[in-house]
Length: 77
Image (cartoon, rainbow, N blue to C red; front, top):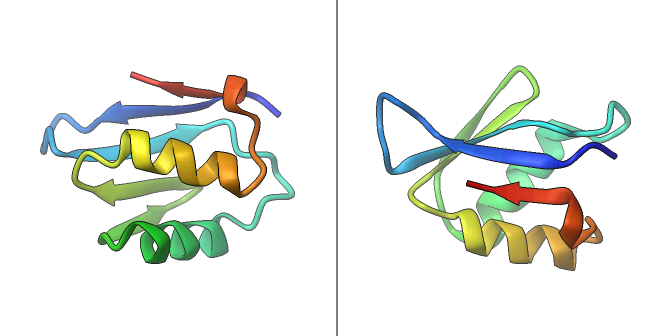
């Protein structure tokens, strides 16, 4: 799996977007729904990008690790 990367959105510095690195076999829609539920935050799915409201980077990383994603594969900026 390629590294998962997150970037602040230019239009709203408090909204972050997971933009790349999801394996094609990952159901991104289900993952987005699960992340939003576990983090108690809003968000949306655009293509294969997950956008979460607020600075959820560290919490999202911890949640993804608990879900089985390798820590070294998550790049937070």
